[in-house]
Image 1 (tube, one colour):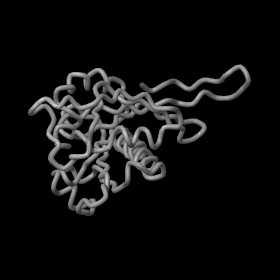
Image 2 (spheres, helix red, strand yellow):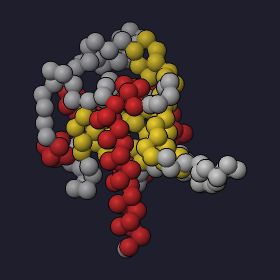
Image 3 (cartoon, helix red, strand yellow):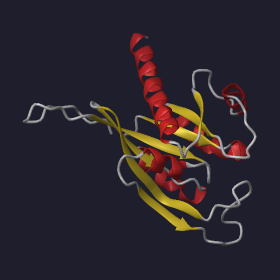
Image 4 (tube, helix red, strand yellow):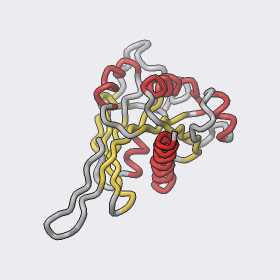
Length: 197
């Protein structure tokens, strides 16, 4: 979803709009991140957890009562010429059939990681690696969760050396914005390297 820039009749420019996916495991903070950084009221498709035995693994996220069933949507203006449209993916495997639709036209993705349930972000990483979609890993630093540095997380996830790992708090606008900027810069570096090859 890369929009073509053009001029308006009044001489102002229409900003380039880029589609970014926010992915990760159940309860990693995707809805929170989209909500904290969006300059518009985010569209959220949160529903109360079903309570069906075995449907939702709440280990490590016992206080969670809702889940995203379709997507979250938000928008952020990075510069006068650049806007990001954010699409938060559902984290539970029973909703993964939506990912192919959501990922069409995406510039890249942010994979949220929760160190209390680090293995939950493997499906997201595998999904983007298999499709060649650039991504960064953003470790959501939950209160009372053990802290690990970016290098330790990268080793634990067996990431390629060039994949950025960023520590942040999904509730804080500045940190979420910096994660998105890191992704855009990473995609630009990859494209520059590819063009030179």
